[in-house]
Length: 341
Image 1 (cartoon, helix red, strand yellow):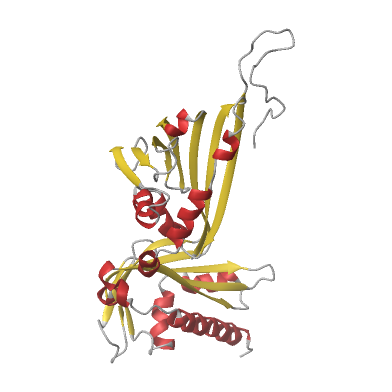
Image 2 (cartoon, helix red, strand yellow):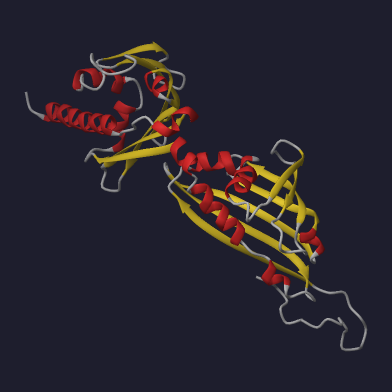
């Protein structure tokens, strides 16, 4: 909100009659929208030029036209923004991307010339933050920060997040976007210490156990390369009669032994042959205060554009069955070890 709001006089004279320089008013306004979309997927739009392209496409009444003056979406990119007819004093302006933080998913664009500065703003900056809330949810925080001379208090009402709020809602509800990306999650309370569960899930032991415990899910799991760490590749075979490809390969791309998080991505076969562009499974073993744990199994996927009208089926049923079978197996092993011989 503005600072120094007690001064509204337009003659800018001190008590001694001497004219003084106007003070600078500063303000900011924010809007937040929760979305059932992974933060990484939203950032693919917000962190690139795709954002203005999509807003122009979906909301021409908000963004009438956008032209790239220079750049490819990184820091230093300049775009010319044209607003819809009807507001003669605010028709177009240029803005420059001054910050692109791909790690923290923060983007800032500052107005550099044009009507928005001609109105009286000395600075006008837009910030987008995509905040991860969970594997399949996030928050879009849209902020405007601005400065103007305190002799122009009416500019406080001109600064608005309404167009940014409309853009966020349109992007989250964009049908093609919803069809092409998504995630599903399953959680199971194990009643077991997290370390015991991770001992199975953290390496290749889980792959060895699945064909024994659940041959109806995977009939065979073979080690192609690696020792259970990042870069390990497995060849997985479905049971006879499974429609589509009989096998697929998956690679371990993250094994976090400290936080008990593992990510594997399908690199060829099966899911990729069924219309998926990306198919990633994340396993998180979450310790609880009572020395028990939760197995959180998440699927993140992207569908090829040509399959958006007939999206392939995604389900966590297999992962749920695996977590239940592994939990039961660990409990049986512990019970056997504790039983006197």
